[in-house]
Length: 326
Image 1 (cartoon, helix red, strand yellow):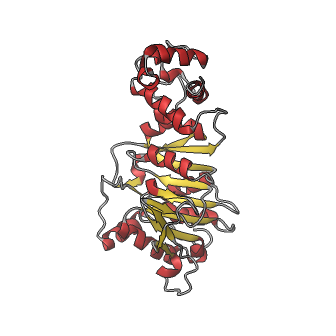
Image 2: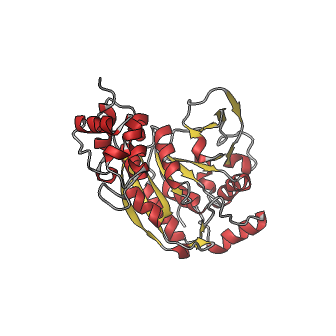
Image 3: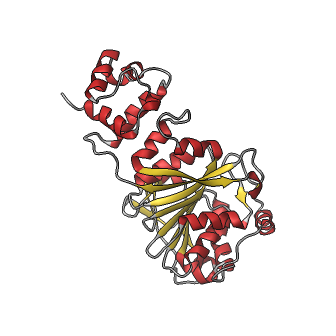
């Protein structure tokens, strides 16, 4: 225990879940971390420091939330958690107020789907109070930690601009969530996520790897991605059927290109849509014909006989840029 933060143990987690009548669901990928060393490890990799806003996706019952607040103690770093489950989102501020009262003012939870969040100022159509602060949970009337949620269609505006991502992500949404957040939150500088082991391998893979694919290439547009450790299945409740791994990333500039991100990603999608075919064949639909695909590939100094799995993000960007030339 540090700075007055009491982390959750296995008994605490089961007790809160039982009181709330919460049963972890496969649909939401709910496997709660019950081992304190694991959440401290993730928080240490996230390394909150002065000026940071940490974004936690899927905080669940608060295991990682409390570890992130513990790691933030002594700094002015803030934490905003995005939770899709209404019951868990409502309970989390009470857990923080009870177990981390000294840093509860640095915390806010927003009930939302992480695939729909945007940064401050990105949605202005109307406001709706959905942000729940620990001051509300503990009975304070001044709303110090309360925020606003603004929506445009399905977009949910975060109260603060995140600089760090820390999350335990379900395997079926891990890559879409990370890609969405990197695209929607330009303030996001770095992060660490815990995902299913095979998903982590794909996220970190480089050209030439058998697991390199569209997600690997798209992530490389935004960031340098690296493996950050293995997490055994025994640290979760309920225990999943697979092990997990940690993936860390640091944002970097995309390749210099005249093509837009959407144009580059369209080339990636076409190349890996038929990954066993040569690029001349795989990009025929995108280019209009095999002959036109070959012309564009040669203009980009890419071998038409190569396959998508051999190209890095800079080469995909060159192909996309070639399509803009007369």
